[in-house]
Length: 290
Image (cartoon, rainbow, N blue to C red; front, side):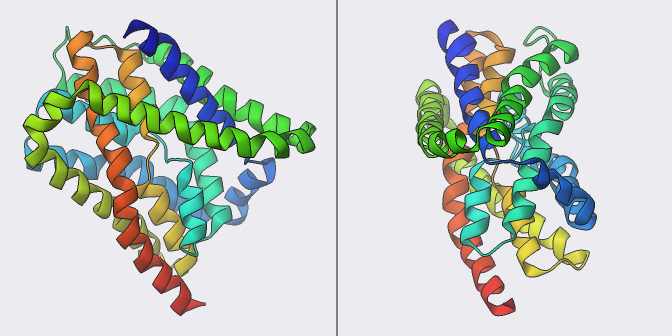
């Protein structure tokens, strides 16, 4: 377990974030200036409203403190890389999706440590986990911001090489994601079985609610249908690998680690199932608006 926590999880997340960086350019961040309303709406939905919504779910369903903290780790994590692919499939604004994924992933170096400290103080006992904001920020920087920056630099300076390795790295990242999610579920199988009647409906409803949340916020401020789909996918599709890796970094005891990683693992599976009906509705709306 120590080798998995200290080496495999951070290394896997680093590879996944490197894959993200290879798909980004400086021009993607320039859209923040050209599309400020859409970017601000996406940031507000994911950084502010998403954690508030998830907190409402953990309180309403009355899950244990360890599971509640696991869900809040997920809520603190940035959006998933696959949100870009799903946004394209449903007819959303791909450029906006890519910009939000990159921006929020970089901002997570600041937002994640602060949120993790807050939620740990709310849900965990003082002796369960010790969180240093500075230490966690440095680790987040090393395993998220640095690989993204390396990927962007490689694409800018050696575009031909980046084009060759990006498809391969994307496949490796997808495989690592599956391994991490399945491993987290297997490690806490007994907890999953014991809490299935609560966790399954809670997680499924959460996925659909977060997909709808991004869409509704974008609609309220008058954004076009394609932008609504992009923000909806960015809000609903989370980077479960970040949350599971955070569970490993915090390492809240040999028994607590699988428990606090379980919500992210379940969400990592169910978010794609939830994306089917949610994405289909977005696709229909985008086709109608075209």
